[in-house]
Image (tube, rainbow, N blue to C red; front, top):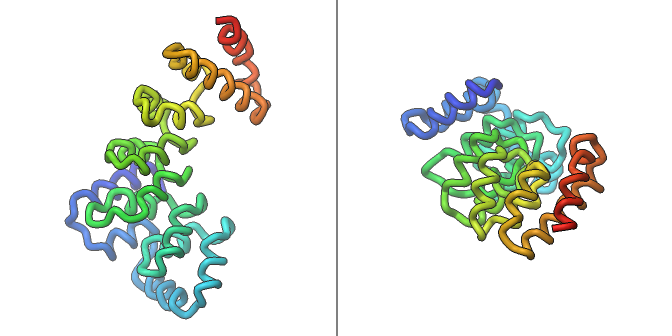
Length: 211
């Protein structure tokens, strides 16, 4: 599913004009027959079997999406929404539907949620959702920078591996405690990710150590 399709899907959800059945088919790219087949199969399975399927990253992304959007046990839906293999279309529907605020924190935690949807969720005002966005590695850099400016979410955003080291260092000129935190975060990321881009941050770390 292309980003254009996902954005069109988000607009459909927000407009409130499309039926939930239509949204579900559009999100999953299937027809009524497939939805009915999945629904019948889901309701024939035991709770433990459903959890086993929904927690498996090898499960078909559309099946996971159907579980996320279906009227199944809440724990099954939550696990589907958290699974990184769940199709982005289902996550978009869950994020934008105005009639139900359930599982938006889980959507905000999923790295497969489109970046622009994470930005949308960051503006909802719910602290739990914003914290999840701040820690999501798929959150856009400009959104993370905005969250760093808010003291409530600063340290969570600074810990996000997607935030470049030079931005972490720049924001952490605010106070000694933030500078020390930035130093430790840059070191942690350097040790965890041995790629060239993070090794290039050596000069920035040394500059912080001598400030």
